[in-house]
Length: 104
Image (cartoon, rainbow, N blue to C red; front, side, top):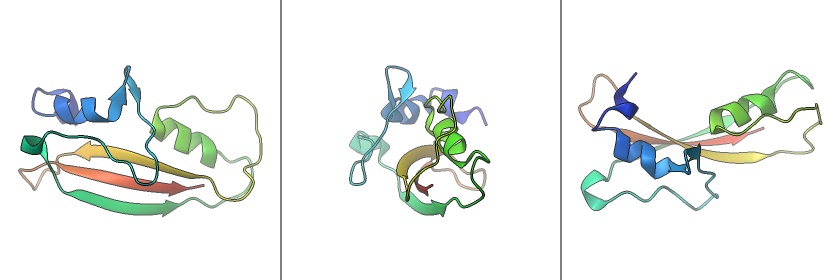
């Protein structure tokens, strides 16, 4: 759990942060890592569905490190957000970069 804050994980965390805030990436963008730190990217597309006002948009904002909207506004259509999440699985000795396409 504390791998991202360790000296080995800190470069991966720094690649997704900008001014201590999680960077928002476009559909075709990805974090820039030095060649020595290149890791495989695992991509997931997550579709969030549910009743209006239950917190789907707030969940995506929280995962992305951005403030949740203060008032409820219904999301019209689909809002796509791309997040990158570096992790080091316990069974593996090598980090991976999760690319999450969240469809809200």
